[in-house]
Image (spheres, rainbow, N blue to C red):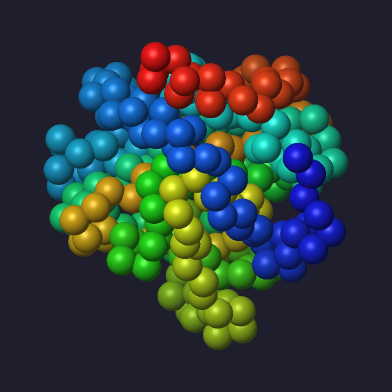
Length: 268
């Protein structure tokens, strides 16, 4: 799969392009089933909500211990567009799932850019990576969707204030100050990334984004696959490999039907 000229132009203009329903229902079902097992893990790769230690806030590195998510990370439908946007071979710098449990268990994320900690902590030279966001659940306006400031990537790396957030363990969320956010939002607006489960958004790593508490009754899980250009490999070693992968081997796509075959095997 390749993005068309309109989609590529939209990515560069807005900092993201959203493709509804890129994954089929059977493929989503396989990922949802695998997610339930992941959320029961007790290792350090599972970060809990500050105010509810029974609820997972982030699950790092699922592509390393879940066959379903490994398959997802190597789907041509994801890899080929990322290669196209970066004009380079890519490796997976990081993967993380934000489950956003309902009834307020899934807490807010303040406005931020993703790139600053990858640059300052992980040693990523340039913002040449794409945050590929796979909707594991329906992401609608009532489930606290990801909110983005379209076009904010044109301002590059913004001044922000780092501090330890719920991720902990050396991961610093760089918050955008209120004055900067107001200026950007006035210039560009704010857009929700909404779509049915199986939709995929390719997002520039310097786009300003955030989300509110999920006070709906329903989970809103998103898998973030952070593909980095091989020529832009990180130099830092401070964080564990599930947060800062140091295998820079270029990824090779699997058969595009690998998730379908897993769904068929489960139904037999």
